[in-house]
Length: 304
Length: 304
Image (cartoon, rainbow over all chains, first blue to last red; front, top):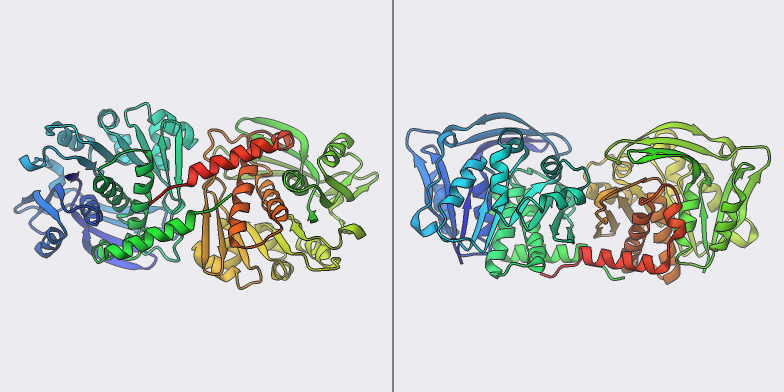
C-alpha cells in the first residue's frame, strides 16, 4: 500500500472568536498527511516550501511516517501564507491576505518511488498542478480522491473539469456542489456531477455532516455536535486525509467501506477544530481516534 | 392510549418557486392530526374555525380517526389565514399576510373526554393558549410535547418560559434554540434549555435533519435528501405529529424510542413537502410510510 498526496505546506495566521494565532503551520498536505498517518505507515507528500519553514515540524512529520522526499525546498524564497478571520458563526470567513510565494511557480515533481501509488489524494490546488501530478503517474491508482474549491470554478473552469473527469471521488462542500452543477438541490447536483467523471461524490456540510453519493445510493453522515469549534482551518483536509487513509488501510474500495471512511474522516476532523492549526491533530493517539469513532456510532444509531 | 393536540386549523396561501396555491387547508393541528393518525386510532383535536371552513375536509379528517369534538366552529366568523412566499432556497420565507380572525379570542375548551390524555402535543400557538390547555388536564400525561416559535420569544417571553417549564419535550428549530438559550453552539444551547424544564430537546434543522438531546446523550437524525421540495409548509407540524403519534403507539417513552420517533416523524415530514399543503399527507398508505422509514435506515447505516 502506498498513499500519495499533493497540496500546500504553509503558514496560516488565523483569527477566530476564541483567539488569534500568528504564522502557525498549516496547509492542505500537512493536514492530509498527518490525518492519514494515523491509518497507514507511510504517506508520500508532494509540495513546496521556502527556506523559512521550521525544520522541527518537518522532522515531526517524518517521525509520523510522512515521507518528504517530494517536498521541494526553495532557498531564498518564502512559503505560502494565508491570513483569515472567521465570523462569529464559524461557517464563513474573510481572507485578509494571501501570499502565493513559492506556490506561484510550483511544478510538482514526483520522485520515482511516488509514481505508482495505490491511493492518491489530490489536495486543493490549482487544477493545472493537480493534472501535472496525474500525468506523472506510471499506473492508475486503485483510488484517486480530489478536493477543490469555488475559486478554481471561477478562474479555471475548463482545466478543473479536465481533472474532475479523471478522478474516482470528488470531495467538495455544498456551495461548491451547487456552483459546479448549477443545481440548487444537492440530489440534482450530485446526479449531474456523477456524470462528469467521478464515481463517488462526497458533499461536506461542515457542522451538518456529509453526504456520499454513488449511483442511486446516498449515505448521510452526521457531524459530531461540538460545544466549541476553536478553529475550523484544515477540517476539510483532515477529513480528506482520514477518509483516504482509512480506505488505504482497508485496501478495499466499495460503497460500504466509503461510508466507514467518511465516519473516520469526520472523527479526525472533529479533533482538528478543537485547537488552532495542527496542534490537536499532531498529538492524537490511535485510542482517542477509536473512541471518537465509537461516539459517532452512538450518535447515529437507531432502531425502527 | 389517547393523543390530544391543540393547534390551528386554518387556510394558507402559499407561493414557492414551483407554483402557487390559494386558500388551501393548513394549520398546525391539521398536519399534526393527520400525521399522528397513521400511528394511533384516535387523535383528539382542540382548535377553532369559522363557518368558512370546508365541511368535506372535516369529514375526511374524522374518517381518519381525528376526533373533532374539541373543534369550535364560530358562526359568522372567519378561520385563521396565513399567506407566505418561500425564497428560492426554501429555507426562508416572507409572511405576506396574517389574519388571526377566530384565533384572536380563542379560548380552548377541552371536552371531558379529552381531559386525561396519555400523550399531549401542544402545537405552535400563543403560550397563553397552550397554558390554558395544560390547566384543564385532570391528570399528567405520560408525555407532553411542545412546539413554539421565535415570534413568542419576541413578544411573550415570560409566558413562554412558564409553559416550557411544564413540558417533557421541547421541539424547536436551530435558530429558535439559539434565541431561547442565547447560546450559539447548539450543544451549549441544549444544555441550557434542558435546565428550563424539558427532559428532552429536539432541534429541527430542516434539510439537515434533527438533533435529540437528553441528559448527556445526543442523537443525530438525517433528513432524506430530496430532489425537489415542493412546499415546506407544515413539515414541522407533520414531524411533531409523527413523533408523538409513534410514541403514543409504542406506549413507551425513553431515549431509544424517541430516536425511532424522530425517524418516523422525519419520514412523515418528507412526504408533506412533496406536494402543496396536506395533499400528500392525506393520501398516504401505511406501507408507503414503512418504506420511507426503511429508506432512512439505509441512508444512515454504516459499520466501523
